[in-house]
Length: 403
Ligand code: SAH
Image (cartoon, rainbow, N blue to C red; front, side):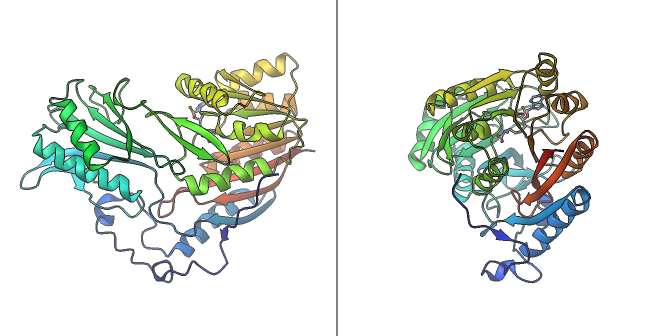
């Protein structure tokens, strides 16, 4: 099995940091305006307690809920950092977040939960936008060019991707701009220009032009390497992701003989790690680009016992069930909306011995577990993981076994 990780759990002594004890003043000057960190006024122990309580309230009716797994150091964990760019009278070019429910930009220089070097890159890009006299985009009028910056960092590899989101594909003095940026930050391994010419609140547009490097970065989790593109889903908190994935695979107790389905597999992360402990893995994912990345990832990691399908997970499972296919274990990791009845009823038909259900929304998870419990499964255990300190979000992993 995988190596044991030491984890901090609620109820244990908090990390030896003054700022995580008692009633918190985390000193974030943007807290009121930004609104991103709703748990700003709680100590870290209180945050963990509150998240565990929420998961307990939703899942303990089905089976045992274990203590939450929190972070040793709950700051600067976000390895995907986004900043919206704009112009303010008096200040000039600003970058940061929209004040909740408005198009007013809060000019953020340092964020307590974002990777620090990513913030430093964004500050320097802001300087470059000023000195190159590039017009920022105005959400209200639709005029201007420079819209957003997205930074993705590889935790294990130290690689950095910079995505410049512009309203048009033409960035004046583009080569000099990139050159100046790389001079300040030689750690940047790729720069991508993303074109978003729509009046939308979505950050990324469809079209991508690679300005420097390969157009993607790589990261490693539990011994496997993963390619991350600008738009592909990849967990933003690498430290906690390792613990989450390890739990999802550990609870399945794989022996090397099982057929495992990795449903909602994204770029194949969980399935690829599980493949070392199973006979074969079948990954299913709706997003075409993610499936392409997954196939590249499998090849790169020389994982031969994994196959990916681009399909709606529900429809795919219905087909598998109709064809009388067999699966011993289903690992599922659906989006916030949870799974659907097509998927769940087909899982029950396929009747795997175990289901590991990973969720970023315990409300929909509880709804889906209720269905599974009604149709022949028992929830053996569940555990919450804090992947998003200071925010209200929580992840959880539940193990269900066939009665
Ligand atoms: N397991 C992956 C991804 C989890 S995020 C990881 O840990 O990285 C949820 C994934 O479900 C996303 O990649 C999304 O594209 C995919 N998805 C959403 N709806 C889907 C559906 N109906 N069928 C299959 N995949 C879906």
